[in-house]
Length: 225
Image (cartoon, rainbow, N blue to C red):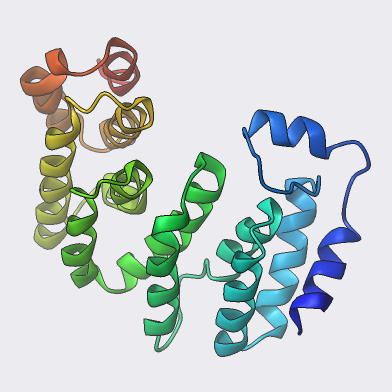
């Protein structure tokens, strides 16, 4: 599939009149086509089924380079798959996107793809740790969004607990960060963790909660009893 064919398929799914509202909601200055998310899901699911991994990497790269809102989300969706053999090129492509992250919807979809690759190879957490000291706010935020799977195990193995504690260490370094999106990411990580590991969430908030913004502390404690 060529980039032109992919863009034609995306444009065929445009819902007339939808783009301005989407651009306003997502605070986009880039081109927004106005494609409903269910339609985008259907299109990218079809692409994943019909293209090889190598073809998907090439198409995802090309879609990302267009800087069209839905094309960047489609690029991430193309690479969001649990089991992929020889996934190094996919991980490298995701890494190349980090400096371009500038809005939550695109960033979240890109990090959903990253989550699958981290689960497949947890040693990549070593690389993610470097994101936590980036001058780029969206890269710092990505470290927490990409590691959300470690909040979800009910009966974690020792290595999974170690990873959980490692990311909590990153979050602890973020609690004084004034950026709203960083505070929100810390709260998101803790809120999700509290559903599966209430004691660690409680301990974190006992130690660091006073340094968090009020809204973030409240959201993090939403499911605590």
